[in-house]
Image (cartoon, rainbow, N blue to C red; front, side, top):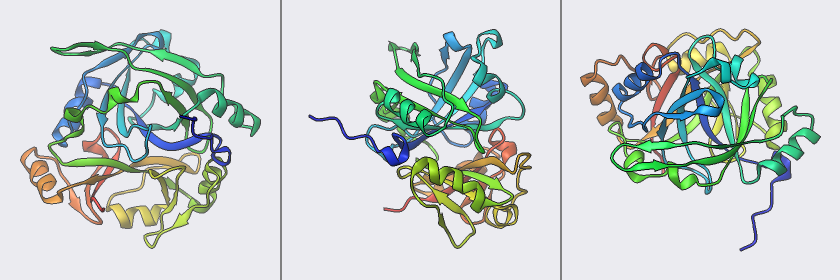
Length: 294
């Protein structure tokens, strides 16, 4: 079979794949997300980079991609690559969007030629110990984050099927897929322009004031503070450089079942557009759960 041609207009980026969320205490963060009704993977260490993570895998929206929340903590600060030192520090919350590409080397060339200052891809092979089953070894090539209005990096999977175990994709809260990364900007239209150029598509403004742009199906949606507060019913995060990550939108099969689970676990939530959990319960992230649509 011939490989799929690279999309040059999006610099080889095919999908917004997952969201890297920094947490200071990985155990506590895992407990918090379990209270939200998510099923998490076991802890995995990327020893060469001094980091550890747990994932909330969901159902991919694009072939070849994954779809998950990554809770990431520091295991050994002395081993952190320079681009990760700033990312894995400060307040908890989303620190980077991770884009999927089918060819990291080709995407790197296109991005650098277009003025995005990425270092060459790093190849990572890490052990993932599955209790009672032994170990598997995910492999990927990654372009580490660069300065941008909202930091992002790029990943090519070599065995994405390891992230797609059916038992990990079924969640007590009925979560199906990550639909969007949510950000706040003092000027959402201007902030979206950077990503329009990156993805090679125009942003779409919705009735709630969000400006949505995507290289595939999972979106980045940017709101100005007043529109954010009207949509989510909680204060907008401070956007120190004019734009900041705020949270995520997730599709669920059954909002009533989700609400009952949150009530049983003592997690405060509000019904605004969807069911909204504020940052105090989700490691610095607003999470909006919306009903899955066909």
